[in-house]
Image (cartoon, rainbow, N blue to C red):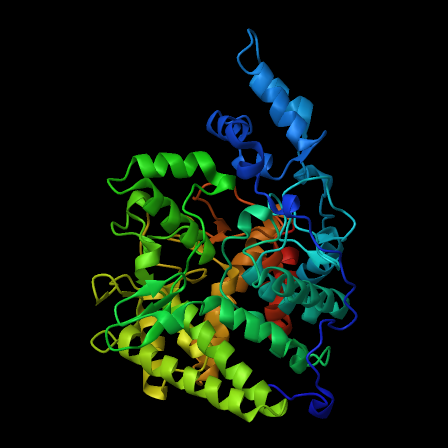
Amino acid sequence: MLRFLNPANWLPRKRYCGQRQLPAIPAGETLTPDDRYQELFVEVQMQRVYPDGKIFVDCSPKHDPDQILADYRSHRHRPGFDLTKFVHDNFEPQHPDPRDYVSPGGRSLPDHIDALWDVLSRQPDDHPYSSSLLPLPRPYVVPGGRFCEIYYWDTYFTMLGLAASGRRDLMQTMADNFAYLIQTYGHVPNGNRTYYLGRSQPPLFAYIVELFEEQDICRALDYLPCLLREHAYWMAGVQHLQPGEQRAHAVRLDDGSVLNRYWDERDTPREQSYREDVLTARGSNRPRHEVFRDTRAGAACGWDFSSRWFGDPQDMATIRTTKILPVDLNCFLYKLECVIADLSVHAHHPDNAKTFRARADARREAIDKFFWNHERGVYLDYDWQIKALRQGLNAATIIPLFCKLASAQQAKSVAAAVRAQLLDPGGLATTLVANGQQWDQPNGWAPLQWIAIVGLKNYGEHALADDIADRWLDTVAAVYRRHSKLVEKYDLRSAQPGGGGEYALQDGFGWTNGVTRCLLQMYPHHLANQARAETDNPSA
């Protein structure tokens, strides 16, 4: 609940809580690696010079980028040209060596997590020359491993842990960075990389500023201009849509309702996964640009990738993200509209408050109409192209409870379905499908555990919420005892590090640290359980 600190003093400002301003970014510095290096980029990625395509797009050139491209063009057809040597001579990888940090043994989970915040922090001046990294004005925390930049929805869950650790300094600077990104680009990109500028991620900035109010860090009112601009980004072009039409993120349905989808401005392969996307498109009978756009939109959703977005749950080539209206995205936008309406009242803008309250009410009605399955008693995604609910139950069904827009009866029905179908030994399952994708069985993810726990508690389902928390914390603690680390995702069937997807499992890990640290504060008995387990089995 927002408490609106000192509302009489609100002014729409460009500076937030002490943010320092950066100079304007030259147009050339927002070029993506594909745009900058052209055929050199394609050859490096398709020939797999690096085992992970993200390494090259995050490299810093050792010389002027234009000269590197010119040298490549003049040498590539000469006898004995060695592409790998050329790349190593001209580019410097920026990914940290995971061996750089070794966790000391014997630390409790909270102590381990608290020690990691500074390890995962980056400074504004740590900016490689002409790399794809977008500059930020203040320090920030990255997830870890190959992810050495901020990510939008990750940051909210990381902030939960920072709050539990008392790191208000990093909470404030990270939110100010988001305000800067919105001011500069009109939205919070997927991450602060040039190749992420074409898309955003689940819009959780409203929750971030609400967390600021709860922690007495900064006024939510200070961020109202940013929230308004973020809403405009998601709703761009909606005023021109007729029933049955869509543009970018917005879809106007036949009854006139407006709902949103994930989208990316580009319809080319993702640059960090260029080769993978090209091969996926080759396995499809659809136009390549459609597959590329749907794959990029699948990355924007944060669930990259999952059967949730596939026509055939076992076949990535059938991905159809832009044809699907996701229940979670629309719930988050409902929350954004509610927060804007509330803040507008306290900013003495009654007309704006009335407008956004009406938009939130209309969205809530549409969510109930298009996403609620009466027969199964769950929320499901909606395929607007074929005008039918998707059939695959997944963890997004609980997000209307997190956003407080379900009725008491709907919440009770969702809780029953979660208990019967989505409760795994290690926590909340992501989907019911096993297909090798990382956002499917058997993997569980920290943000979904948090959303489920909070959502269920919102409606008095405390026993189920506590059960999910217990199972998740037991899983994280078991892996920590064996490996002295937290990881990106977990196998909920075996209490092992997770697997699947396009890249190797990543250590760190920002949102796992954040959610786990906060849950340990909420459920302190787990610390005693962990200590007992280590005493009973010191070799574990």
